[in-house]
Amino acid sequence: MAKDEVVDRVTALAESLLSSQEMELVDIEYKREGRHMVLRLFVDKAGGITLDDCALVSREFSEILDVEDFISENYTLEVSSPGLNRPLKRESDYERYRGRLVKVRTYDVVEDEAGNRRKTFLGDLEGLAGGVVTLKLREGQMARIPLAKIAKANLEFEF
Image 1 (cartoon, rainbow, N blue to C red):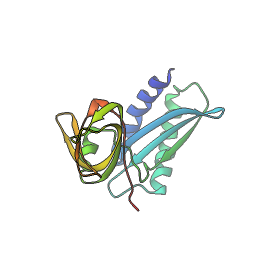
Image 2 (cartoon, helix red, strand yellow):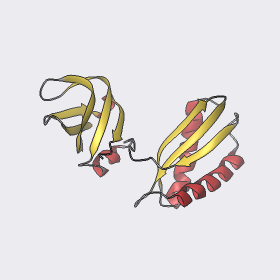
Image 3 (cartoon, one colour):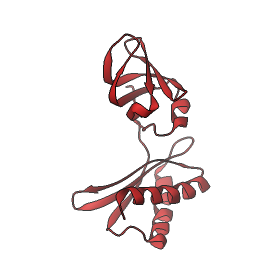
Image 4 (cartoon, rainbow, N blue to C red):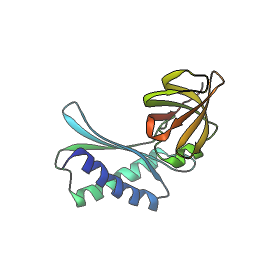
């Protein structure tokens, strides 16, 4: 089974399990690390995820994967929190984290309101409307970035 197919099937199974636990699936990685494949689930819930939550999901999801048995390669299952630099994956994330500092990387060069052309933006998230993410950049100007041009977006932790 191709990697994309594995990720799609794991996503469906994980979302079903996690919704019953009042948790959410933030991201999935299925990749080769050294000689072995790693299936990594990043999960979260209101108030934050605990080590016990990760252990519970790992046990229960491991049982589901054993029953479904669709991954032909040997792999290691890991369950983790998304961390301080949580990725923004869903449209709802851009509203949920309004006002927070984010770093956005785009596929193509995007121009901010001051005329600066760049692919990396750091600023306070103003929100998402009409498929466009708005940031107030650290330099003071605004940037409007089409969601379709975003390669990666993460919360940034300020020390």
